[in-house]
Length: 239
Image 1 (cartoon, rainbow, N blue to C red):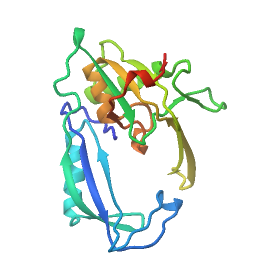
Image 2: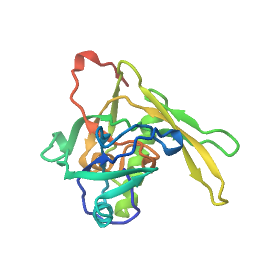
Image 3: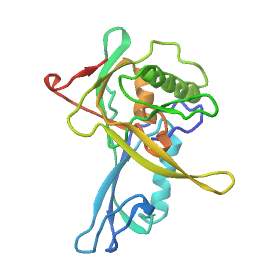
């Protein structure tokens, strides 16, 4: 999910891009951000999704892919485009009492990341569901994105977040490397939750979360979610 700083009110549906790898059989390590093997007889196939509230952004991405002849390079791996499709609007047809909608979501291997800013000289604090200020910072982040996109503050009700415990891993951590203005490379640790959650609130803010991502560091891939149907008997509400 990416948030472009343009005051464009066009809505954009998510796009799914599926790619097949070519005849390389090397094993790639963490320096490329991924590791897999493939060959001409046994290709490695994967798909990923892109979402943005800015129509032109998706248009440029797709046009750029086809301009390169249906082939891109990811690290040292050449990939062929197999299929590009538009996914349905997840909010289409949803209505609720007093204009509020209710939707259960889960991170798509893309953790929700919230970090509480601290005074200079003190280390920022990672927050997780159940921590004080966690839901408040999630809402502030959504409203900031709304303000950035539309050039005006959001004046409606905030979103209610209800997180649900899951069996197995609920926290995901990874490291990205960011180049500074002085040319040096600095490692940045990203740690967030993979817990599913239910949102109840105005469609405008929930739409921002679906198209831009929930939480912080969306440009690094954090906060992308999918709709999720879950039996209420096997979850624990963390309010």
